[in-house]
Amino acid sequence: PSAEVSAREPLERLWRAAGLDDVVMTEFRITVRFSDFDDFWSANTLPVGPQAARIRSLLPAQQQELRQRLQDSLPPGADGSISYEAFANAVKGRKRG
Image 1 (spheres, rainbow, N blue to C red):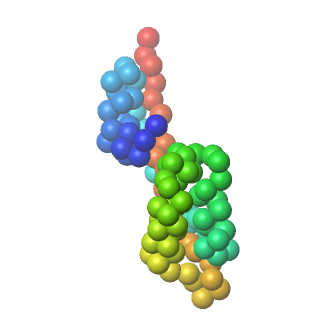
Image 2: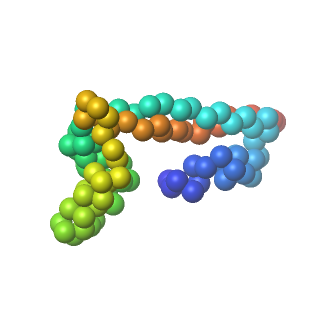
């Protein structure tokens, strides 16, 4: 439900608190690539996911400011593409019983 809960330590604590044993954490890393900034912006403002809901809750001027700040902070590659590394934590455990 949130980035804070999805971090490794809180996620592991959550699973152990649920009574699971043999908790194993794995991190998956991928390179996310968009053809250009407009492709990036479109993917992050589709009506799906928490980031899109947050962006839609902003006033139009705030959305534009966010867009500009992101564009300024995400340098394009030589071909105009936007790439960055993303990761997800996976967890598994066993309920003994």
